[in-house]
Length: 253
Image (cartoon, rainbow, N blue to C red):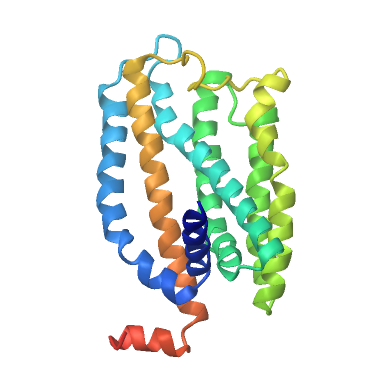
């Protein structure tokens, strides 16, 4: 047990090192790239061209293969940022602050995709592009938190002060996540309940469910890829004049 704890502690300290993370992450990017995009196209092509037509909604339901994965990723990214914010506030781990800064634009992009695809889906389904529904409104609030985090970070010249302020804000914004998740259960909303259920039967046919699961999986692989690339770019920006980075670029390390 002690050996496991020591290994976890060692990995934690390595993870907080910019040079170690930059070198270590470079091994994963080609692998994740090769895995992510083929799986994404498999799910999208299967869902759009080969899944059956929905009896009630017709062909428009196929946007689910973008909307649901994007919404899921948008919430998960923010949750991960909130955890990183807690880590930074408690242990002052530099990588945690960098993670928030790197992931915020990615999370915001997926939130925008979820909102736009939801509006396209909602127009023929509800007869309107937008309604102040609890799920839609709380998702819009999520986007606002992402944008405020990006803006707040840019307003600081000192990185430590920025990391501290953004970490606290990110943790506060996490209050919105259970509202997004449970709003359809707590209030009478137009937004339909969860399509995929873990502990009970999903409300979608298996022929539609399987490509949806593949799309969700591919989105998480891609967000991992984008996250690695964004973090490496930010590390390069911050450590540009450091000797370890110069040696790495010159091939001396």
